[in-house]
Length: 125
Image (cartoon, rainbow, N blue to C red):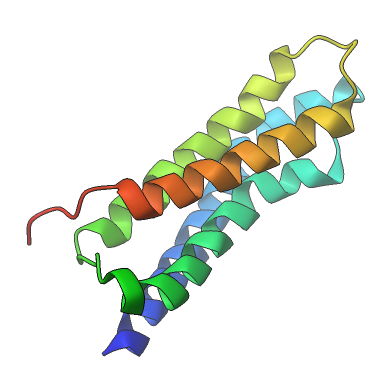
């Protein structure tokens, strides 16, 4: 039964990562034109959703806070926040180093992902 949960989270990972990368493509282009693009910026969309799948495989047996209704909502919220992080980096002033801003944003995305996974209420079935 647990393997079904992991497969569904991986399916949401497969669906939401390309969608969030496509929606963030204009932000990547603008950051590239401003010489503010860092390789870590591409991870804004990939790493949090991968962490969500990892947490689902490790923490669902312990915490058992699983609901089928959260399978689409949690990755959707994380994808929207990662897209927002990509676009908000455009407005960071130039006197802050791009790599430092990217690392701070990545750490914030990982914290937000963990908070959403552990503290998001289980919705009714």
